[in-house]
Amino acid sequence: MLHDHRLGNHFIMSLTRTITGVALFASAASAAPQGPTDHLIVHVADPSGVAPSISRYTDTGTLNFSTGMNAAVDYRRVAFTEDGGFVTVADNPGRVIVFSAAGVEVSSFPIPEVFAVGAFAIEVLANGDIAITDDAVHYYSEAGVFLMTDSSWPSLFLQEDRDGGLWSGAPGGGFSANYRRLDPSGGPLLGAFSVPFGLDMATAPDGTIWLAAGLPQSYIANYQRDGTLISSFSTSVPFWALEVASDGTLWASEFEGDRVVHFSTDGVELGSVSVDVGTEGRIFSIDIGRAETFGSTLCLGEPNSVGAGAHVRTSGSQTIQDNELILDVTGLPLGSAGYFLMSNTTGQLPVSQGVLCLGSPVLRFSLNPLQSSPGRWAQFRPDLTNLPQGTVITPGSTWHFQYWYRDANPGSVSNLSDAVSLTFL
Image 1 (cartoon, rainbow, N blue to C red):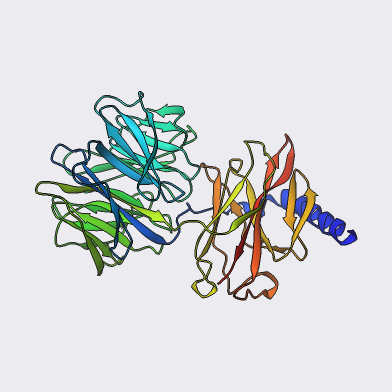
Image 2 (cartoon, rainbow, N blue to C red):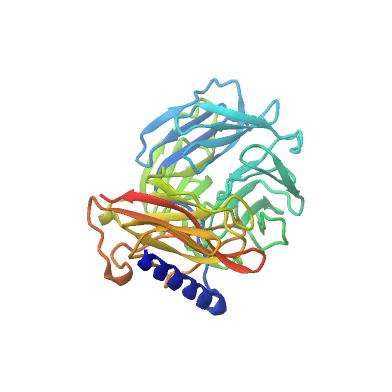
């Protein structure tokens, strides 16, 4: 017990140093959660612009399921949810339909705030909120509660940024396109740029932007957030929809074909998936889904200044040699600084506003500080070959991870997320 009290004192002293050393976190930034690609969802549209079919494939081209080409619902666009399922916007009547990871409809909710012309795009944010656009962007909770409307920019495309912003794109004059980076919390624009040729967009793990340009030239290009061109490559046919996998490679759908093509960043074709588009249909949109979560919850986090508390989600791979473990934490205060902890033992020790569920020795990723995004989340990918104190993880061992972060109550305090346990392979 004496050892536990010393551990708590050590944490509190370290917290004080963290709070006073604000510069430590000044340049910290978190990337939007997206684990290794294991699902590719394809949205097929008929000539009227609505879709009679939604199909899901593995990234190797194996069909998981399809809603079929004769569905009674007019689907508009699709987006993956955090649990491996997906949502779609439907017309007649206008509503959002929620599907499980197995393609079974589990719920739906109306969207009267969206105009009769119908929704152009849908995106699921890291915090679970859903964004839908017509001539404005409307936000809903994952339970279907209307949150707000951002009327600053009409758009045809939505893409969550890697640090919580929401890119909104729309055609300009001629073949040009305009892109605005919105704040999902309702704040002012976070950024903007325009390009002479552009269409669908996707954000890369490094925060840059990829655009597909189908007309008048066929190419795919990479841009900085301010619109500065980084690189591009020409394509033999025009591509309509574009997504970026977590390894940085690209998936793009043919504008008037039946293929979704996997490209390297320099334009080398790595593979493709053929899709049934019927006699007159086309691939209207695609999305990349993450691997399902693994591990189990060790303990619950305490409520924080913005809600029920912070939650850790694991994805990627628990195989040590893959070195692809991904730790997401959601439900954080906006702009909150923090870092992950790990241990192979458990405990129950009050620390400031939270409870430390890890036992001694506790390893701290203090050299890898994070800062929560506008979506109130952060992501960390620990290097399993270079862990604190030279720790080596062995196959079959179980480790526990918890996030320690700055909170307010109302003054500056700290808090802890829930903890997750996982056994490495």
